[in-house]
Image 1 (cartoon, rainbow, N blue to C red):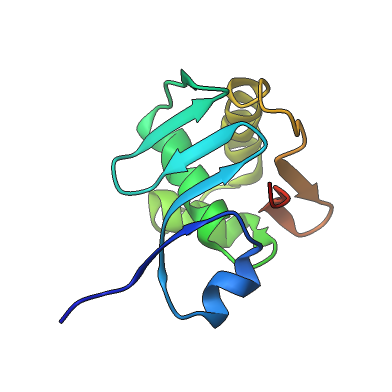
Image 2: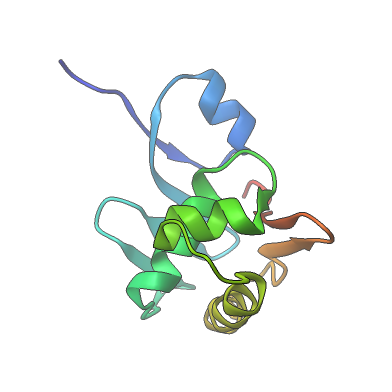
Length: 122
Protein backbone atom coordinates (compact mmCIF):
# COMPACT_ATOMS: atom_id res chain seq x y z
CA UNK A 1 0.00 0.00 0.00
CA UNK A 2 1.50 3.33 -1.00
CA UNK A 3 1.22 6.32 1.25
CA UNK A 4 1.00 9.89 0.01
CA UNK A 5 3.50 12.31 1.46
CA UNK A 6 3.47 16.05 1.71
CA UNK A 7 6.15 18.67 1.72
CA UNK A 8 4.32 21.40 3.46
CA UNK A 9 4.48 25.13 3.82
CA UNK A 10 0.85 25.38 4.91
CA UNK A 11 -0.93 25.45 8.24
CA UNK A 12 -1.50 22.11 10.02
CA UNK A 13 -5.29 21.98 9.40
CA UNK A 14 -4.67 22.10 5.64
CA UNK A 15 -2.29 19.14 5.58
CA UNK A 16 -4.67 17.07 7.71
CA UNK A 17 -7.56 17.87 5.39
CA UNK A 18 -5.52 16.53 2.51
CA UNK A 19 -5.03 13.25 4.42
CA UNK A 20 -1.31 13.06 3.71
CA UNK A 21 1.72 12.28 5.83
CA UNK A 22 3.89 15.28 6.56
CA UNK A 23 7.55 14.67 5.72
CA UNK A 24 9.06 18.15 5.51
CA UNK A 25 8.18 21.66 6.64
CA UNK A 26 9.75 24.76 5.11
CA UNK A 27 8.98 28.22 6.40
CA UNK A 28 10.87 31.50 6.74
CA UNK A 29 14.34 29.99 6.39
CA UNK A 30 13.57 26.99 8.57
CA UNK A 31 13.53 23.51 7.04
CA UNK A 32 12.54 20.46 9.07
CA UNK A 33 12.89 17.03 7.48
CA UNK A 34 10.88 14.66 9.65
CA UNK A 35 12.05 11.53 7.83
CA UNK A 36 15.81 12.15 7.92
CA UNK A 37 15.56 14.12 11.18
CA UNK A 38 17.43 17.12 9.78
CA UNK A 39 16.89 20.77 10.61
CA UNK A 40 18.42 23.75 8.85
CA UNK A 41 18.05 27.48 9.42
CA UNK A 42 18.89 29.62 6.40
CA UNK A 43 20.75 26.65 4.88
CA UNK A 44 22.89 26.02 7.96
CA UNK A 45 22.55 22.67 9.74
CA UNK A 46 21.18 22.87 13.25
CA UNK A 47 22.22 20.10 15.64
CA UNK A 48 19.31 19.01 17.80
CA UNK A 49 19.47 16.42 20.53
CA UNK A 50 17.07 13.49 20.17
CA UNK A 51 14.84 15.07 22.82
CA UNK A 52 14.80 18.44 21.06
CA UNK A 53 13.96 16.83 17.74
CA UNK A 54 11.19 14.75 19.34
CA UNK A 55 9.68 17.89 20.87
CA UNK A 56 9.86 19.69 17.54
CA UNK A 57 8.31 16.73 15.69
CA UNK A 58 5.37 16.58 18.10
CA UNK A 59 4.77 20.33 17.87
CA UNK A 60 5.08 20.46 14.08
CA UNK A 61 2.76 17.52 13.51
CA UNK A 62 0.15 18.54 16.08
CA UNK A 63 -2.91 20.57 15.40
CA UNK A 64 -2.90 23.65 17.59
CA UNK A 65 -1.45 23.79 21.08
CA UNK A 66 -0.14 20.69 22.85
CA UNK A 67 -0.71 20.47 26.59
CA UNK A 68 2.37 20.14 28.79
CA UNK A 69 1.50 16.65 30.02
CA UNK A 70 0.55 15.42 26.52
CA UNK A 71 3.78 16.77 25.03
CA UNK A 72 5.90 15.18 27.75
CA UNK A 73 4.10 11.84 27.38
CA UNK A 74 4.67 11.80 23.61
CA UNK A 75 8.38 12.50 24.08
CA UNK A 76 9.29 10.61 27.26
CA UNK A 77 6.31 8.38 27.99
CA UNK A 78 4.26 8.60 31.21
CA UNK A 79 6.05 10.46 34.00
CA UNK A 80 5.15 10.78 37.67
CA UNK A 81 6.81 14.17 38.06
CA UNK A 82 5.97 17.79 37.33
CA UNK A 83 6.87 18.00 33.63
CA UNK A 84 6.66 21.78 33.16
CA UNK A 85 10.17 22.66 34.43
CA UNK A 86 11.71 19.92 32.29
CA UNK A 87 9.76 21.07 29.23
CA UNK A 88 10.65 24.73 29.82
CA UNK A 89 14.35 23.85 29.81
CA UNK A 90 14.21 21.83 26.60
CA UNK A 91 11.91 24.28 24.81
CA UNK A 92 14.24 27.18 25.73
CA UNK A 93 17.21 25.30 24.23
CA UNK A 94 15.20 24.44 21.12
CA UNK A 95 14.08 28.05 20.67
CA UNK A 96 17.69 29.24 20.99
CA UNK A 97 18.83 26.82 18.29
CA UNK A 98 16.04 27.91 15.93
CA UNK A 99 16.56 31.62 16.64
CA UNK A 100 18.21 32.26 13.27
CA UNK A 101 14.95 31.66 11.40
CA UNK A 102 13.38 34.82 10.03
CA UNK A 103 10.29 34.22 12.13
CA UNK A 104 11.70 34.08 15.63
CA UNK A 105 8.58 33.08 17.53
CA UNK A 106 8.26 29.60 16.01
CA UNK A 107 7.38 27.87 19.25
CA UNK A 108 4.76 29.79 21.13
CA UNK A 109 3.74 29.37 24.73
CA UNK A 110 0.01 29.00 25.24
CA UNK A 111 -0.39 30.22 28.81
CA UNK A 112 -2.09 27.66 30.99
CA UNK A 113 -2.11 25.12 28.16
CA UNK A 114 1.30 24.24 26.68
CA UNK A 115 3.13 25.00 23.44
CA UNK A 116 2.41 25.18 19.72
CA UNK A 117 4.41 25.44 16.52
CA UNK A 118 3.37 28.71 14.94
CA UNK A 119 5.27 29.16 11.70
CA UNK A 120 3.41 30.96 8.97
CA UNK A 121 3.42 29.75 5.40
CA UNK A 122 6.34 30.99 3.28
